[in-house]
Image (tube, rainbow, N blue to C red; front, top):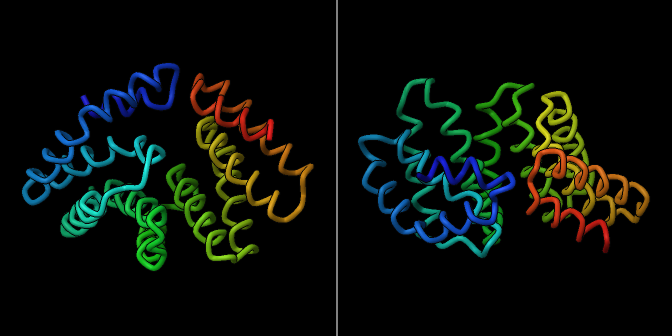
Length: 212
């Protein structure tokens, strides 16, 4: 069920899928805790199913600890678990970044970055988060470089959702640089990509940002 709702959380049924994930959060986390020692890849799938809820509030310490435990257990497996581990490390970086635990976020995002090949779509998500972390820390040049690299990978992969996300993040970066025209251009691209992907929730968010 978690995998089904996760797949639906970035499309036309996003509102209902996110509502279902929110209602089952405790069950999904409990299942992940049971699986983490003997079935860490299953635990990874369970905790990653909760990713769409990240925008709804600050992640709890218990959830952050669970992500760290899953990532550690995955590190003991063969290379087949590399992508799972990279995704869990990315989720851990996002959660700790949101809580202001920047050193932990930086360590996790760099560990995830080392696991992923240069042209992989997952690398775009990792670079986007690393760029936003650099933005938080006031490292403007590094932030812009990572966000632009994320957008370029997303374009080459043809992933509309990733293109929408990357361009949406570039709006904030360009506004902070005082480049309103570039910010508006990125905002328009973000809106268009989310609309084409059929993700009405993200399109609404992109439209609100573009309007402001």
